[in-house]
Each structure stands twice: as C-alpha cells, then as structure tokens.
Amino acid sequence: MCNGPYYQQFIKHFPITVEIPKEQYRAKGAYIWYNEKYQKQWIKCWAYDINASYPTVFIKYNAPNVNNPLGYGVVEENQVGFVTDYEGFRIMVDKGEIAEERYELLSDKDMEPIRKYVKDSFNAKNYYKKVGDKINADKEKSRLNNAIGVLRNHNIDLYTWILTKARREIEQWVDEDTIAINTDCIYSAKPRPEIPLGNNIGEYKEDENNGTEIYFHGSNYDWGNKKCMRGVVKELQNTYDLVESVQTRSPDYKIQGYLEIVKNED
Image 1 (cartoon, rainbow, N blue to C red):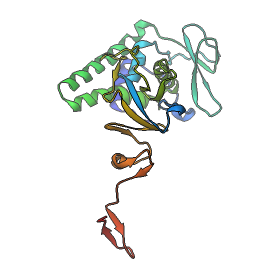
Image 2 (cartoon, rainbow, N blue to C red; image 1 turned 90 degrees about the horizontal axis):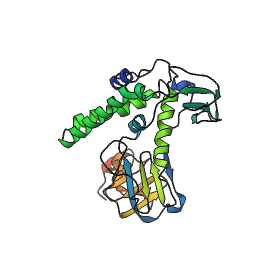
Image 3 (cartoon, rainbow, N blue to C red; image 1 turned 120 degrees about the horizontal axis):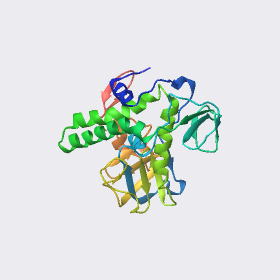
Image 4 (tube, one colour; image 1 turned 120 degrees about the vertical axis):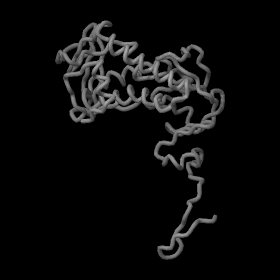
C-alpha cells in the first residue's frame, strides 16, 4: 500500500488505526452525470465549480470514528453506516437503514485538528497562487487531494463517506436545467444566482466561459478554450472534433510501400 508523505501528514492530524484495505471492497469513483435532453447540441451554459470539494466535507460534516466499528445493525442518530451492494461496491447508508458496519460520528472537538489542517493548507494554496508561486500552490493542493486519494487504499469506509458527502453537496443544486455534473462542477442551461460564490473553501466559482455555448457528447464537452475528451490522447484533444467524432489532425508520417516511413506532406 502507498504511504506517501501527504498521506502521513494527513493521518497525523486525523489518526486512522483500523485499516479496511481497498482489496476487500470496490469503491465508486468521482461523480460523473449528464442529462440526456442536453446531449449533442450547442446550448448556452453556466458552470459553477466548488472550491476544494473533498476537503470541504471535513469542514462541513463530522466524520465517522472509523477506529471504533460498531458492527451490524440499524443506523441510529449521530451514526453512519455502510453496506456492500450486489456489485461489491461499498455504499454509505443513513439513519434508520440497516448497515453491515456502523460508526459513531466524531464530535466537533475531535474534528478540530483535521479542520485546522484542511483550512491551513487551503489558505496556503491560495496565498501561493496569489503571489504566482505555482509550484508551492500545486504542492499544497496535493497535500489534501493526494492524501484523500491514497486513503482509498487504507480505509474504504472513510473514503466512501468523503465521496458520498461530496456528491450530495453538489447534487443539492441539480434541477431540470442541469446539463451535467463533473465531479466538483455543475453545468446549467440557466444562471444559478442561488449558488454561493466566493473564494472560501466550500464556496463556488463561476467559469470564465459562462453564458457561451457548450457541446456535450456523453460526459465529454467542447466549450470555448476548454475541452474534456475522455478516451482521446491528451496531445490530440485540441484537434478532435467532438461534434463529428473525428480527429482532424493529419498524421506527421505515413507508411509508403513496404515498411517505408515518410513525412506526410498532405
């Protein structure tokens, strides 16, 4: 299992002694969803991206005490539970539901060390970004994101709790005008003035392309100076026509005759 430096810093402030390795269960990944009625058409779009989606969960909610499992039973007040679905994925369940494993939620006092760590790292990232120090800004961002990613290898229940809470956080804004959701960003066919904007952790920022037209094909999109092309090599994404689903760039070289490679002059 990976125990990188960011993970070690993380558990220093949020001790985890009981391990539930990822091999024991499957874990759902980032939340990707799109609305069929907005597929394969150019439509005006407004996007809102939450600041520090996964770290926000530790600020807004009290985490399960994964070091003290309570076992099988009905999830009670101030508890959270987990079950395994028919595909082997670990799923979080709430009060009143039957769980294969349950945990008490930590108190606000118990959460203080990790909340301070999260806020300090988030503020440091913003400071470095403001002064143009990209290297340290990326390093601070990695302190949180990499640690949470590695957490999947050590305690699948805590990892599932984080991703479930993050998904619910952005799901609360879904309505009939929602075009898509991409992990920590919601895309809407109309402006959403009720979504809280700001630079603080857990607040949202507007996309620079807001009000212009976007084209979605599945979860991939083409929007102004931004493209999301899953399944297309990064170096070829800028020349990929999502509308026609074709690559417009000609190859640099071509085979001519028997094993003769020549520069393509077309």
